[in-house]
Length: 444
Picture 1 (cartoon, rainbow, N blue to C red):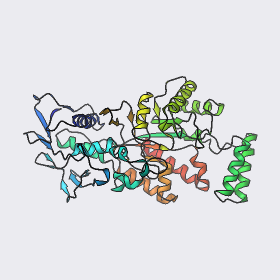
Picture 2 (tube, rainbow, N blue to C red):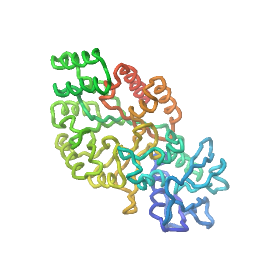
Picture 3 (cartoon, rainbow, N blue to C red):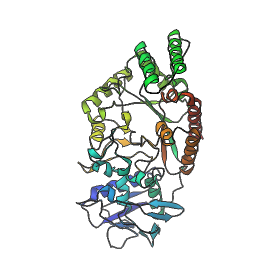
Picture 4 (cartoon, one colour):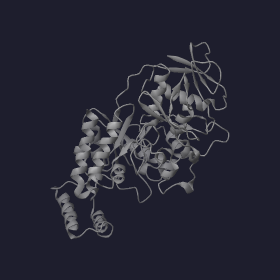
């Protein structure tokens, strides 16, 4: 199916084409539809912002595609109904619930709405003084959580509804899943120095008593005798051999206290890399804390990992999920990364970009898409744990609810760290059970 798209105001034509390209390539119906902006002889037409006669028309609100666009905090959302789906707009005036499509006319500007989410427009606007320590931006400055939409893939639903509305018959695809791990620290107690630091943390930070100290020293000497495994060495069961999409990201350097927990060319790291490969994992780079804004550092770490792997590194996820627009995107693109998977939340689960599928971010300087694909992170274990206050009954129920309402029309990328299980202390068995529940769900 091919449509001619008539655009009344072509000032922002490249942004409009970017959205239509995203729709045409969306996994819901990839390869089944295309849009032309020049072939007026096509039998079917969509009018965007034009009063010309067409099969379908989309209003152009010109709040984002404008020489003086609104600040992101000025946008609100309205709800629209379509064949059992509730769809969410990006507008500036409140409306009562409406139908998505009325006599072949769409009720809001779906092109600006999609662009708002996938371009990460609001994150380009957020200024340094509006950001928390890690650079993500306070929740109140993010449209999706501000409007309680984090657990809804609003873009994926909107694309599916739009394609159905213009006559493309697509079955509702089941959600796909992707399992990932970040190896921030492969082992907890590699030396006496680390033992003393861990002991001090137990005493001063975690306020643990003598029994916790005894257990720590018992574990350390058991490791030295070869009778006990290091608490962070969970790879024998963390790494899955099942044929599912899976990636593990390794650190290869760093210059801050948040980095340098291990050397990527050490025997321990090489052994874990070997385990990952034997389990069928793709291997990517976990750029260090400052690499998100330091291209020379990013490049160096990528080259170090490539030397150890003896192959090109094309996958990455930023440490602490640090991603600043446009700097980090430009570094990723310049360094030949094909796929990044950073854009998720640290303190909650959900769809930061409105979609779980991979897509190309927008380069505002060049007015075109970047070359690399961003595959959003949707569920990180720490985010889920902290969001539900370490209450495992709440965590389990929350996860079940999220997966139940997102059975279709999106993709969910999970992240589990190898070290998280030890950090949960006596709750370790519950977290391990939760991990097993997720694996079972992925495989079903």
